[in-house]
Length: 114
Length: 111
Image 1 (cartoon, each protein chain N blue to C red):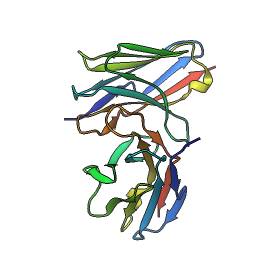
Image 2: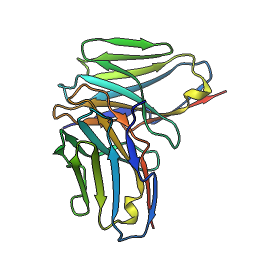
Image 3: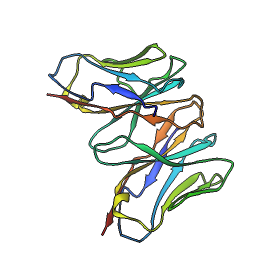
Image 4: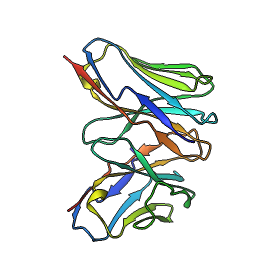
């Protein structure tokens, strides 16, 4: 049963610390999305990649957030420095590429910044 | 611009009744419309989807309808059960390949 794998599942950190979240997309999927969700609110798109190239990161606060795909099996989302308002669930999702394809979500990384 | 509007934000029904959630989208190039169900503390999971070349799709108690002219699509759940209680999200791709989600509908099915 192929799944998107995210680490860490839970993270509590102090304000100002760097946080790195990792995502392993489903093997063969070439599109990766990062979404943020707060208190069961909507899914806010932060960034997405196709064939490892960033296509859009307009939803991401550029001064502290960065997203990369070092290789086809790993996507990272980094926050530096973290702030309490960054507390949320960060979901990674992957799909087989192109508009019109289903995407599958990982379990999420639950981040709390104190 | 790119936007997906979803209504209502909360919906409460009695077990056995039907539930309808509606979404509108702005990008006329959108051609794929998935619906996800998210239970508390869990990830969103796909429950049904529809492509722009059909007007309706049904899977047991769940159906989705699409009106491309009006740019809206709806989720219909019949014979609701308590386990249908969750947050439901609609979504649509924009021309740039971004999958944009609606704001979510919290469905509560009362026994």
